[in-house]
Length: 156
Image (tube, rainbow, N blue to C red; front, side):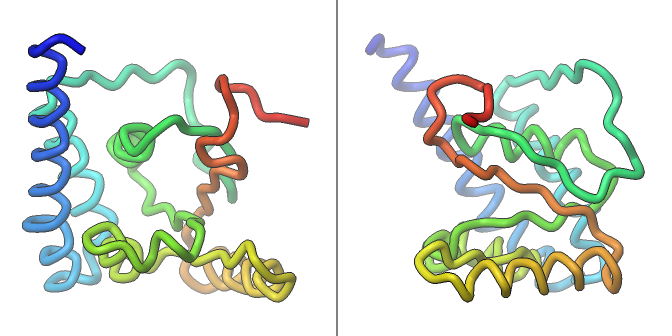
C-alpha cells in the first residue's frame, strides 16, 4: 500500500471516529428530538472532511417503508444517511451494539438490534419494525447480507 493511501486511510478513520464519538453521540444524547437532523448533517460533514462526494442515481421513494441494500463498509452507511432527509431506523446485528463507539451510536440513535443466533430474534425484529413504522413513523434500512456479498447484487 502506498504511503499516501495509508495516510488517507488514517485520516478517514480519524474523521469518522472523532465525528462519531466526540460530536455525534453527545449531540444525539443532548438533543434526542433532533437525532435525524444531527445524523444527516454530521454525516455530510464527515464526507466533506474525507474529501468524498456522494452521487445519487435516481430518486428515493419517500413513501417507502423499507430500504434493502448491500454494503461494503461503513462509508456506505454514512453516504446513505447523508443523502436522507428522513430519519431511518437501521437494523444491525446485536454484536455491533456492544462495540465501544459505534454501539453507543446505535443504542442512542434508537436503532433495531437483531440477534441472528436464535429464532426469537426474528420475532423481535418484526415487532420492532412494526413499532418503527406505526408509532415512530421511521422507515427501516437493512443490509440483509452485510458485507458477505462479493459484489453489489443481492444473493438469491
